[in-house]
Image (tube, rainbow, N blue to C red; front, side, top):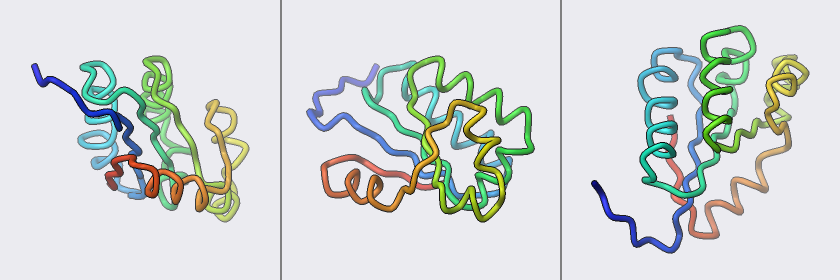
Length: 118
């Protein structure tokens, strides 16, 4: 087991891909395992760009969102992107915090969060 002594134990997962295989085989696998296995204490999954459209129509991915939220992963989505795709209400119905993400992402980047992008 990996020992974690990092005081900045925060991870933002920036999910931008419309490729569902990336979502299934990378985004959700790493994000959920990171939380379940304690690799990171605070994890935020950010749905941005084409991923918001994919998530709005893919019920299997919606189930993964619910699982991630159920284990303590915070999920946010870019409001500008979801508005452009016309899916804001669908994402909000999944209990996703839909907000303008430019400032929050900048905060994560400038305040010691590790950020990975898929």
